[in-house]
Image (cartoon, rainbow, N blue to C red; front, side, top):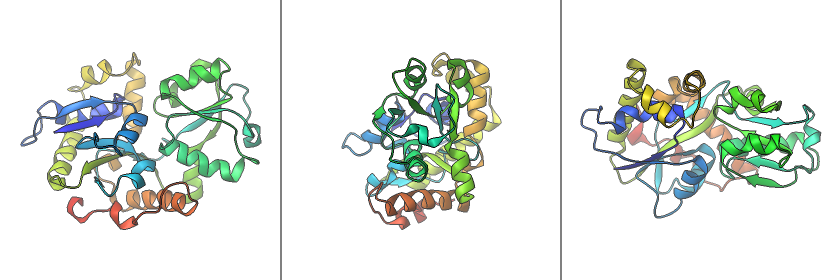
Length: 282
């Protein structure tokens, strides 16, 4: 079976047991490590793998072929994307007509940014430039971009680049809706045994929590020279109760985000019932 997820600490922590033969009855998994922009686009092609980590914002394009699984992904509070600048401005109007770097056009981060900017940036931003998330902060620091939309460990490291926080989009979303932030989704092809896959992934999450030391070398080997304490902070932020099970509030957050986006024409219209598939409920 083929699976794709990022080399970020939360994903390698969660999927370590599954991909190292530590889950009973699970098949051997062939792993593709890929940035979220790659998996978002891969999922809409015939080359899409059996199981993939994509942005929740990309779900409307793939729900006919893939089912959303209720575990393994990233959804929570206090873990949203940030808009960073070099000039220290906290006035949203300062982004009017500016160049903004984003990690993917179909990322949840960019979708949240578009929803926020529509209300707070008069006249709209200027050029949007997609680039790998680890290149965004250097581009803003060096003046090649006016602002950057960042995710993952950038929450902890952006001061090292001399950058300032303009807005925490996760805080904005939580204040606006009262709901957690849907970030990364785990999907599987609908023709597969979704109940079994869900069980294997949930078991991998539980193994990771019960044996945190077991995955440490694996996590750090893929962490792009990240300091161990930053990697651990990354795991603690993005791996939470929603990773084991989305639950009612998790599904409510996903429906709120994608329902609002569809109503505003930012994603294709789709059947909300396809988000929660009876075969993969806990």
